Image (cartoon, rainbow, N blue to C red; front, side, top):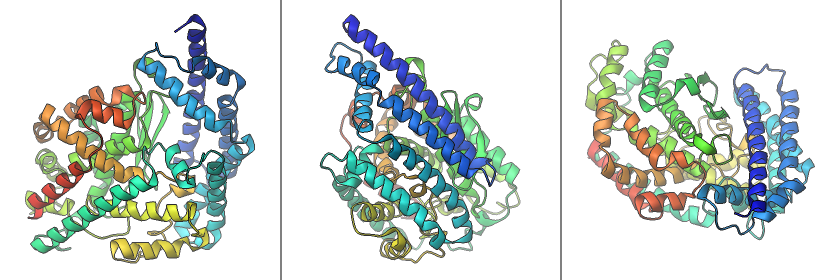
Length: 504
């Protein structure tokens, strides 16, 4: 870099660190909002969040930032880290300067208000009083997307904002292949006659002491390599992970689900997110826009890798099942290892996405993907969303939701303005199957799970993916480590093989 370019880069980095810090402050307020904020505090919190959003928008569209990016345009003699910072901020700046500050503030406030109203709507099952808040948020999101669409559909614009890495046509193709795989695995498992009855699985729904559940989950997190001096565990209605500081990465869980293993899989899932963030916040990229997960899609690939390929594996439970039985001797009395494994991997059509089994989970995501495309790009009205949800549930899952709480009011994502996020969950499953195939050829993942030395897996992932944060694209990372671009055949092979061994 020339002296002028270096000065511009140093200033860009300084601005970036300030904006990242404000983002962490927003995360603190958001975490508090979800966990311990008073019932009456929502309105002012909405204004607080809107104020911070407007502050970030002002900094992200400043003349000084634009001049720095102009000076750095086309710079070639820079490190990958430097090029990535310029690239990410160029994309952010080009979009941000087009969006009015008032719209940014309105969006933030509408998001907070909608989430706040969702809590009571979900509790009471009252969609009629709630949907105007969601309708306003969707309208504002579409208005914002229209400004930066550049010829794309509104939904593809929102997918891009969520760093999906794919457009809706590509996702539809991938999801149709996934749906075919899921249906085939379901048919084979049912035809085998080896699925457990409800009575066989009843032990999972007995009363399990919550404090002991917490101790058991904490032990697994410790083995995964979760750094408790850099994070904590909270309890919420809808679990999430929040980076409120480079060394303060918090996860949450819940204990309201009847199935005891739901909480275990939830905390491993959120632990996967947190471990990724902990790995990304390192060295010179710590505290910058680069010191975070590469994208929502890659983030979900890691949370789902830990939840499914690790925590639902028979090899994992070879180590943890005896400890589980020791912790809960009365509930597990007479339960064999084979019965336990079939129970935790049983295929069951249900309403709840978070608690869905590994096979049917993808159908829940496809349902949400198709609906949000319809109310963003199509003519589906938010007022009519419950009926559309129920019809899509019957089409994909073969059942009508038991209640509106287990239907359209189930997830918080739409209530927070996260349109184009849901595909990341299922795309993550495709990505992690490819990552796992390569990792299994490099380290003994079976031995790591059988011995409870899960940090071996974390160390491999950190070395090959996590430590580079947001520097490289998904395609670049996959090509560099696995030797090929995204290939959905790995997911197909993995799922069919696993369920053939379990129920074949």
